[in-house]
Image 1 (cartoon, rainbow, N blue to C red):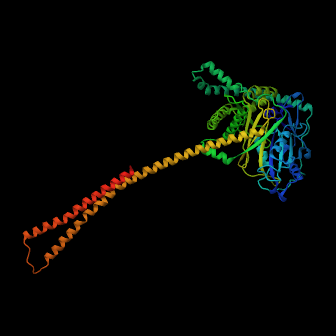
Image 2 (tube, helix red, strand yellow; image 1 turned 90 degrees about the vertical axis):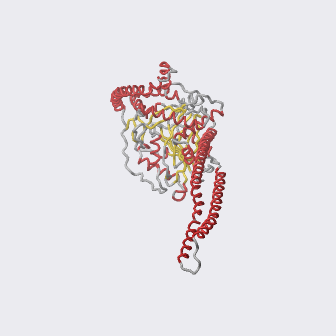
Image 3 (cartoon, rainbow, N blue to C red; image 1 turned 90 degrees about the horizontal axis):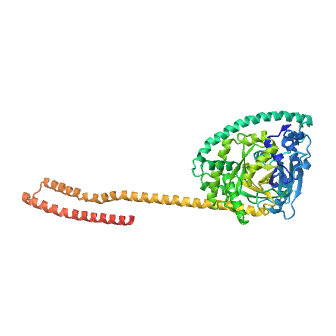
Length: 588
């Protein structure tokens, strides 16, 4: 027997005839990968019979304390009627996407049976005309009450229920199960009295802890607020009060929800997200998810002439610090209110504003402690907690945004390959729109679940989300193209500088090369002198030349040899000047 936590019990307390607090998933499978290329309904029943024996989550049933003296307990049932919990239906012809979404919305609007373990599954056939889905595929819709798990625990359950290969061997259903004994009223009352004393001690401890955190928060943030001389001390206190419990912008998603639901979903390929992340620095998948939702809401409200200049805020679940998430961990989450800036028209400005505001919210949550909400829920009576949530968190936000990271590898159930996994969540009073994302196999599946009266056209809302994502992609591409042009321009400039430098360096060696031939005639003159000297040394019978004749001959010879050298030098210099002039013209 397991005692529910305060957070788990809060979801039970919020259950009524209009808002059913269960979460669900819609998974679509391709049976062609299974043995024989098909998966029969009996095979799925056998699969669930084996999982019921393995996982206590499928066997837990609620037991409530008399007079609501204490939080309820989970007891482990020994016998589970599998055919009651797992049902088989089919879509009418032609079996398209819209018919599937309508069927899922109708099932999701029905409450669970609280006298049994709080889960149900529907195998849906007839999916014959859905784009991107293999013919012969089947869907599995399964829902659990939110008191049994949160989104992170659901992701762990998904991994446990599936395998990473198509091979499948049925699990034996003959294993021993130890069921819990049904507690009587007296036992529950005594347990309740003991837990009340423990809660009082925990409340005293939490009050001291909370006081110190609030003082620390004031020391950290109030000086920044007081530094704004334009608002003064009274304005600072007013601003701080609005931060804690300020009113939200009124729109169609506020008010009480009806018992009827609408559901639709789209897929965000990680390749598209990669384009955005590569061209806009510091952006995460969660930033893209929130910006896509914000842009879609802006387009939807604008279409209905309901767009205002203030923007709206969203309630976002956050994983509690240090929480151990597994298939049996229940709810380990905190809540934060985040501005999604739907009043900003430019996609890039809206994306950057969302990143900045969500970062500030996370910083505040870290200062207060992400487990603060869970601690408060454990010591405050659930009826009071429900009212506090309505006055604070639900009073500031207009919708719920949640994004859960799932496995990025293909998974198989009874040999059938999982093609898509869509999270179906909860619209609540004051939060009539819920947008939840779940990543599987490099695709972020985004599901819209809403009150039928607030969003009567879910297919159009999905179109708005797609257009919002496309705007982000096109904006990122333009930024990438501009950055590429800058890189090419810088590269061209550097190349031009390099050419100029290389040409200016190459001029000097060219002039030297032209002048070097001027020295060549000198060796020839020396050679002639040597040859004449040798001839003079040789004895001959000719008349010896006198000194005056020799001087006259030598001077005339040198005059003749100097004339070609001078002309050659002048010609070479003229050629150099011409080359320099042409090169300088080209550079200019």
